Every structure is written in structure tokens, then in C-alpha cells.
Amino acid sequence: MRIVRIALAIVGVAALGLGVGIGCSDNTANNAGSGSSSGGTGASGASGAGTGASGSAGAHSGSSSGISDAGPDADAGGLDAGGKEVLYANSGLSLGVFDLDVADGTLTPKLTDAGAGATMVPQVLQFADFDPGHKHLYLGATTGTDHYLYANAIDPSSGRLTALGASVDGGLGLLSPRGRVINLTVSGDDKYLLTVHNVTQSYSVFNIAGDSTLGTEVPQADGGNSNVGAFVHQVRVDPSGQYVTICDRGNDPATVVTDAGLVAKPEDVGHLLVYSFSGGVLTPKQTITFPSGYGPRHLDFHPTQPWVYASVERGNRLITYTFQNGMLTEKFNVASVANAADAPDASLNATEAVNGQRAGAIKVDPSGKYLWITNRNNLAIPDPGPPLDAGTDAAGGDAGDATVADAAPVDADAAASDADAAASDADGAADAAVADAGPVPMVFAETGENNIALFSINQTTGEPTFVAAVDSHGVEPRTFVVDPAHKFLIVGNQKKVFRRQGGTLTTVLPNVAVFQIAADGRLTFLKSYDQTSGEVWWVGSTTVTGP
Image 1 (spheres, rainbow, N blue to C red):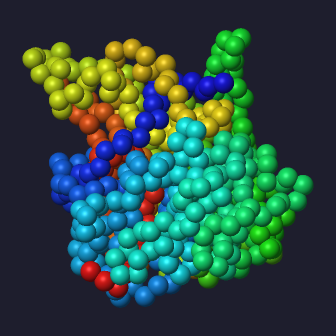
Image 2 (image 1 turned 90 degrees about the vertical axis):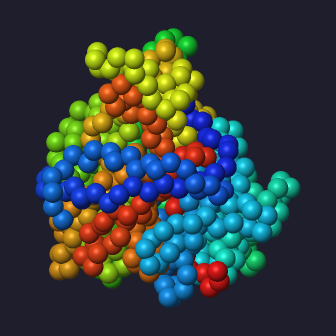
């Protein structure tokens, strides 16, 4: 069966070409505003070289003036930040390596002797994680029918990647036994790789061999790794190594196409699950069931206190928990958005069907004094066309942008707006929705927020307080990372969209945007780099010793 999204065309196409569109836009004033409102839920690539046109999207943040997926260990956890730095960013099938200038944040594609600028991954990268020593990088990648895991060695001098080992199926990748890998993490003792699979609603645990290749799967008791949640989206091992958390964001109600016609599909409620973890085996310990309209996407741990911060994608909330003896207890619950009006009434299950606003990646700063969380909106509507006085420029826009072939925004989220419809599509391949059937192109609705919100953390209570939100300078800030020197925050704006600007139809490409971090966590936009090979799903950074 297929899920039909209202007014949103889902194509699921990854660009195959190489090239990095490197374009920068001028720094603009940060947009921010109060908008935190309390209220409990009751639970809770870049590619090869090349220079292209500038492309900061400048999406509306919906806020007034004022002051990851950030993944575990995405910012070179604990490494000496005094050396040179590299950034990894995927774009479609390419995984680019960039030199990151610690003086001004400039990104430069790192070329090999043969002139190539990226590692080509046979499938679209979904997520990646470093081992504790940042000597290896593990990838989860997928297409509509192929889902693999990859282990790579990181050259300590250049940061370039070399695939490790051959798997039992004869290739360099290990076939995922449970389909699409939407998220993964390496345990702190470097013995296990844990993965979650949204389509099959399950998790897997793999042994990591002594040579850092991926080994056998660790059996789980009584098949407990199945039917975990309708849309599991993140797995983490807590800092003690004794517990594992899994976020299940659930699904909004939808209309489903069946042989009998259109059928209303009820909501899949969200969950937050905690497991005891020993010898690679997960044992259920706690399940928090969220109210209707809410569901967690990602969480992060405070570095020194027993506090956990959850990004509630459906419902646009930031929830604080105490975490003691493997049990979560809710303490605070605030809006993630800068403007409370941008958060829909979650009790009406309106999160995506109405205005497309969702919370995203979250990262607690290593100082423990503040955190960042992304707010995302890529709502598309039928192109209203140019104004009546647009004259002969009515067809305008970038050459070819307004063709029927490009009528809908590219959404390689392999399972609908963030793979969200993939729960009913056997392998997570996105469907072409009703909206792209006709000649009218879909354009960005210019509503809601695409930003990175800063919250200060009370050092006594753990309570987060909204401070500011800065425009992400792109559409759908899916992922971000803090560099090892703690000077820059780099955002991966995932989506390509079309934008109606008077008589012109323009294209906003996926990009990587660089922000400077102030001592208090406030962000200043520096540059954005267009990515021409496809959507940006993951960014990560580490230090290197060489040129």
C-alpha cells in the first residue's frame, strides 16, 4: 500500500552526477524571538570539485530579532582540536571530504591524486557514525531495494576514506538484514554497531571485529528487535554504556491506497524506549508512550548531569528528562520553534498534513551550558503562477526549472518527507504523489521555520530556555555538526525545492551552511555551499594531521 501526502509531491530520486556547487551568501541578521510555551505531553556530500552559483535559500524563520542529525560523536569526541580539520558531507551517492579552514570556516573539496573529490557510495547515505577514536567511519546507505552497511578507515593525514574488508556476500558492504538503516551508532567500547530500521520497525546489533570490519549479528532474545515502533528514527548508547535508547516518532494519520480504494489509516503513536545493554543484547526496561500528535525523533545526553533532551518531531517540542538507573522522568516541556504560532495543534494530528512543521536534529554543547535544535519545514503547494503583471517573464526562472519533469521537489528521503511514508512501502522507496501528476509544478510554500534554535540550560535544574533562532539558509535542516575546535556549526540543508519569486521560478538546491559559534552559543551565518549531486543527509567532522 502507499501513503498519499496532501499537497506534497514525493519523488525519491537521488542525483547521480558529481560536483560541488560552492557558493556563498552574505551574512544576514539573525532572526529570533520568544516562542517557548510550556505544556506537557504527558509522556514523552558533497561531491567532486567544482564551483557553482551562490545558493543560500534564506527560508523564512518566523521569528523576531533576538539573540545533530547531530549524531553521537559527530564532532570528533575528545580528539585534540589543535590540528587541521575535515568535514564529511554527502550529496546523493557521493560522500565528499572537505578541508575546513579553522580560521574562517571556508570549505574546500579535498581532491585525490586522480582528481576525484568524493567517495562514491552505491546507495544514498542515510546516516554515519565515527568509532570512539575517530579512526573509522561506519555508514548506512539505501536505495529502493538495496540496503547496506559500510566500514571505512579514515586516513589520519588526509581524512580520505578507504573501504574495509569484504562481506559474506562478496562485496565491500554488509547487506542489512532488516532493510533500510535510518540511523546507527557505535558503542563506546567500540565493540558493537547498533542500527535501527524504520520500514521493518526493528533494530540490529553487529559485532565489530578486531580489524574494525563488521562481523556477525548479535542474536536478541525472543526476537525482541522486531515490532519496536512504527517509525523508529534514532538509536543511542548512553554515556555509561549500560543502556540504549530508541526514538520512535510514529506517524500522522494518512490516506492509504488499497485494492479496495482509499482507506483512512489511523495514527501510529510515538514512543521512547529504554533498554539495558550488555554483551550486545538489548533487554526492555522502559517504554514511554506519547499522546496523540507527538513523537520523538532524536535525543542527546548532557555531558555531566543526568539529563536527557529529546527533540519531539511530531508536535514540535523539546522535552527534558532526568535519567537515573536507566529510567527517564519528564521534567520540562517547551516548544522547539521560535514562533509558537508555527507549531500546529498536535492534538489535531496536523503536524505534517497541514503545515509541514517538524523538529529535527538536537545537540547538547560539550560545555553543557546550551543546546541547539533544528526546526524544519518543506511544505510544497501547487505553483500559483506569476503575478498578472509579470508580462513576458511569466515563464521565467532558471532554464528548465519549470518543466514538467522537474514539477515536484526532489525528495530522496527514501520513504517520504524524511522517509516518513516508507512504513508502508516495503523498501522505503518514495512514491510519486498525486501532486506531481499534472503540469502544475510544486513550489515551496514559504511558511513556517527552517532554523537552528538555541536554548540555554539552567545548570542547577537542567531547564532549557529559548534564546535565539537563526535561519538555516536552506530548506529542511536535517543534520548538523559542531567542528572539533568548537568554532563552527555546519548544517546540512537536505532539500531541493522550487521557489516562486514574482515572474520567476527558481531552484533552491540542497546545501551545506557554515555558522560561527559565539561563546554563548549564538550563531552567525558565514557561507553556504550548494550541493548538486542530490540531497544532503549527513555531515560529520574530525581532525587530521596532514595537508
